[in-house]
Amino acid sequence: MPLPRRVVVSGVVATVVLGSVVGAVLWAGRDDPAYQPPTSRVVQPGAPGQPARELSGTDLSQLSPPGFTAADSLFVQGMIPHHTQALEMTALLAGRTTSPDLTLLAKRIEVSQGDEIARMRQWLAERSVPTAGPHGGAAHGGGAHDALMPGMLTPAQLDQLRQARGAEFDRLFLTAMIRHHQGALSMVEQLYATGGGLEPASDQFAREVNADQGIEIQRMQQMLVKLG
Image 1 (cartoon, one colour):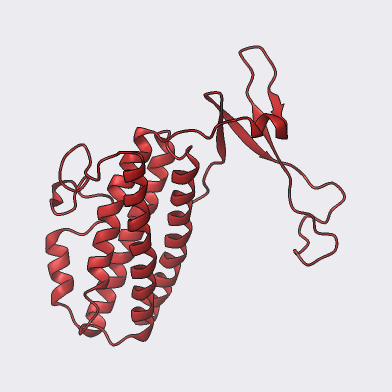
Image 2 (cartoon, rainbow, N blue to C red):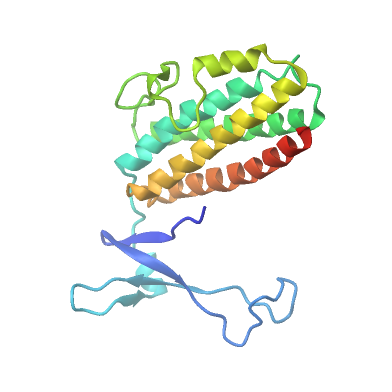
C-alpha cells in the first residue's frame, strides 16, 4: 500500500514533492555513473488566493517536528494486542508442524514483533499515554474478543488452530496469519486516513509495519500455494 509523504508546517499540512533529475538516466542503477539520487522539495500551501511557497533548507531547519495525535495513540494501543496475538499464534508451532520454512517464518515474526511491542510500550510511556485503549481492556480486544482489531482471531479460531497438526496446522496457520497481517495493513491505512502518522516516530513505525508485513504476506501466500 503506498503511503503518503506529508509534513506539518506551522500547523499546515505541506506536500513533499519529488523533484526530477535533470540530465540523469532516470532508471539507471545506483552503481551507474549516470545515477543521481532524486531530490525533493517541501511546498507549503498558500492562503486562499495566494500561491504556494517552497521552503528552503533554512526554513525546514527552524521547524519543530509535529506532535502525536489521538489517531497515533489509538494505533499504537491497538497494535500492541494485535502483535501479542501474533506471538501467541507462533508459540503454537512446537509439536504441531514439521515445516522448516514455517518455523523460520515464525521465528522472524517473533523477533520483529516482539521488538516492536517493546518499542510501542516505550512510545506510550514517553508520551504518558496509557497502554489500554478508551474502551478498557487491552485496547479494542486483547483478552476481550468482543471488539477485535482487524484480522485478529476469535477464541474459537485459536482453539481450532491449537487442535490441528501437520499439514492441516500449516494451512490453518498460514491462512490465519495472512489475514492477521492484512488486518495490520488496514490499521496502518486507517492511521493515515484519520490524520495520524504526522509525528516522525509514529510515521516511521507505521511504514515499517506496512513494509515488513507486506513482504511476509507475499511469502506466506507462496508457502500456502506449495501446500496445495
